[in-house]
Amino acid sequence: MMTTRARWRFRLPHWEVHDRPHFITIRCAGSLPAEAVSRLLEIRQTLEAIPSHSPQFATLQRQYFREAERYGDAGFGECPFRNGLVCRFATASLERFPEQNGWRATDYTFMPNHVHLLIAPGSGSSDLKTAIRGWKWYVAREANRSLGRTGAFWQSDWFDRWSRNDAETTRMRDYIRNNPVKAGLVRRWQEHPWTHSETQAQGSRS
Image (cartoon, rainbow, N blue to C red; front, side, top):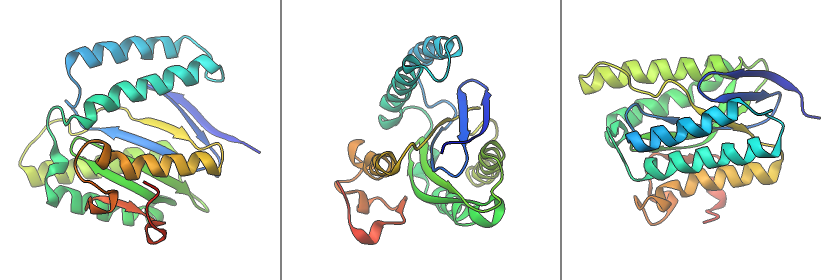
């Protein structure tokens, strides 16, 4: 039975559900052009005005994600995850995720200007907001230090969606794996050095 652990709104609505995997997308600052920002603002304002349980809400949420992803896959703006050093310490920090906050990153991919995560809660896991904010803060600090830059590294908010069932979890995992392929970075997801999947040994579904 689904049990809501927390709901909150910042720029986007967020919904954390107890004991369910969550798909997370976090974009780097400046990764969207002005026209995309304007269009996403329109969608976001509509989302704020309708109940989160409504079918229209789910449709608009998917529309928001697709619109943002179209520009993300094109590699718009600064692309700090083209830097191997940044990717290495960011992925290493995900390996420490369970001991730090109780969440486990089962699948992830680092694209040039954004990251997709599939994370699962464990026993005694912290709330999702605390876990993601803490990870964003750490990566931003270390990345800026490594790149010799200052200022915002990430966009202030992120997109999240909890998985309703095992079939949806599989679709989320497939999306993460195949994102580098869809963006033209590699021909097979296993070739992308910054993609990880706990089920990798079982082979690709692509």
